[in-house]
Image (cartoon, rainbow, N blue to C red):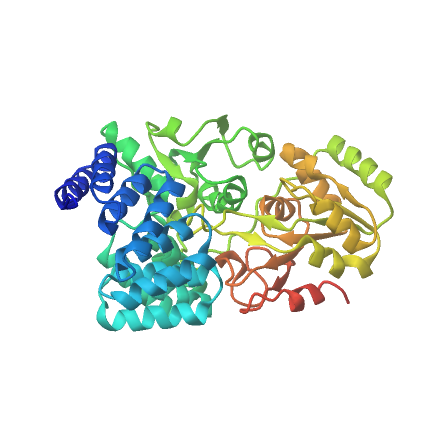
Length: 486
């Protein structure tokens, strides 16, 4: 008895999938498998339908089955690698992705996926080789150009990085992550006006523009001359730390006679009231302000400046409340003797959550080992302390690491606490911006490649007096940590 031909069912499954009907596609694929269980394309079609439906484990199993049944079927191997990397298993993804490309190297996206897995595993040289080879035959592919730019950025080659990223953006303007990478490169190069134009593509601004357009309103960033003497609403669309940073540019508007309203996170308002920059403040969200008469997103304030080529405005100045200062002095004294040392070891958004996310992390064990010679009393300011981290930190320090993370629940408490510390050591986060506002300084641990505010070398012009300790290009923190002690 002959085996039924599954080909028509496979073709129907793929048509349904491309038409946005993954459930129907899966039904067709299952019937194709029932007709011929040994059909690799039928299992592949089922895998693609499962992947579209978010059934990752089932998709991976079907891709693997297709590869077993037909070892020369390149798309099945690619599917295995794609699902493994999407599932946070890049080390396992490299072999099947490599196998897929050995069988068929025509699809540039396959090269992108393999290079991305290698980058995930910090095999940057191998990723460079993959991208360089692929560009010889797919030199116009936006994804490859983006990766070439990211890899050049990782090497510290900022001019080529900007060139690759600019070409990628020109070829695929819909990729919202590319302008953010490009902005980082241009800011580190000191090409300020150009960098801010790229920053205009950030997600928050695009959402704000789209919502205003829905109401028949436009959004453009005004010049300083155009709003002198007028009332504007500054809309705080950034995270807490970034709002504190970008609001330093509001002082120039106030000096020019602009009357400032601020709409933003309620947690910031009591602190910002003491800056005397604002005629009024209100708790609000970005989307609540889409109908404001004269809005300026806080992240766009550098574009309003009359001096965009020298955007080195000083920090806001915010004096801690006396009562909070007394309370945190009491708690620090109860914790132990001076010097009082506050520490953080993690901040930002991982790249697997946000492609251009600025994730900063260092091992708390390594950090405490470096701080051990300083003595005194160490307090952890880390938000979201994970299970086991404090125990490991205490073992490395050889002393108690006091959990003061609750100070982050109220910015008034955090402001008072960072102002009292004798040493403040950690990655860049909201507390660093609070320290600057309180007139304090800190030891900042800057990962490689550096975030633009910390520059490529030397002191940050926005954080004078802060001591910058830089991770090396090979991800080694030892030199930076050695700089924390005499």
